[in-house]
Amino acid sequence: MQGIGALARTTGVKVETIRYYERIGLLALPTRTSGNYRIYREEDVARLGFVRRARTLGFSIDQIRTLLDLADQPDRSCASIDAIAKEHLEEIDHKIADLTSLREELATRIDACSSNRVAECRILEALSPAPDFMKSAEGRSS
Amino acid sequence: MQGIGALARTTGVKVETIRYYERIGLLALPTRTSGNYRIYREEDVARLGFVRRARTLGFSIDQIRTLLDLADQPDRSCASIDAIAKEHLEEIDHKIADLTSLREELATRIDACSSNRVAECRILEALSPAPDFMKSAEGRSS
DNA sequence: GTGGACCCTGTAGTGGCTATAGGGTCAAGG
DNA sequence: CCTTGACCCTATAGCCACTACAGGGTCCAC
Image 1 (cartoon, rainbow over the protein chains, first blue to last red):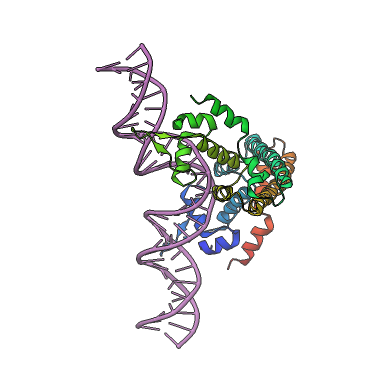
Image 2: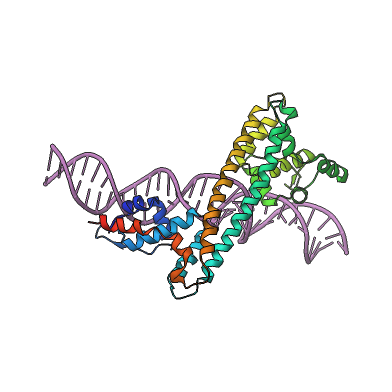
């Protein structure tokens, strides 16, 4: 039995974010005091903790919504949960791969550039479209 | 000399995005035809190509704005450009590290779970706050 | 002169929050 | 009993980097 501020401190989720989660239907509507303050029970603490942890692991709000629905049906097979987690793992692997190749490209450019004048900067060159690109565009222009 | 649609095809940037870039001041205001259509020159093609490439490499709009400003001063040292690129590289390394540790955690959970009932699902357990967390909260509740 | 491809502006929506304005509630201290 | 200040409330707007309308205008070929 605690107010929204205490819940925020307990879970490490900001007050505004808790209200936001409630608004989008991720958290149940809590009971209210006579003065219209929200009051939360341990159940709510656990649920918000779950949401927070899942967000930290990068699950989307929609994925979490589904996970919460599934968690409420303890007798089902957890295959769907497994599927969501695996899907998410693939997304993460994809992102890592993208970032890694991007990193390599950028690192190469930075090594090639060592405090010259802007006019000869290899980084800017790397960002500019290839000369071919422009020449072919010029060639094509009527 | 081409319209916005042609520019979009040439650079692979959507028409709406080009107009957006113009609106936020990333692209110069193009000249217009008598019928108020935008017309672009090779210069504009190159600039948009630069923006697109930088975005693909994950630079923020603000970083690109700065890069474009710097590119317009060919006699300066390219130290600032180097700095932006290095800063961005660090961000990328950070993201890769975060995603990698996250990946490991998730992968462990998935391995531990093999089509049981939801009630025993290791993935859900991993997402739930630790029992300690709840017990201590119960203990403290007055 | 008409059909359809192209273009225009302005506004609202996305996700996942965060921040502000402008108030109300409540318990402790004077 | 009254004030102070911490806490809470709603509603709305802003962030990033777009994307997607709605509701029109332009242009060119047939």
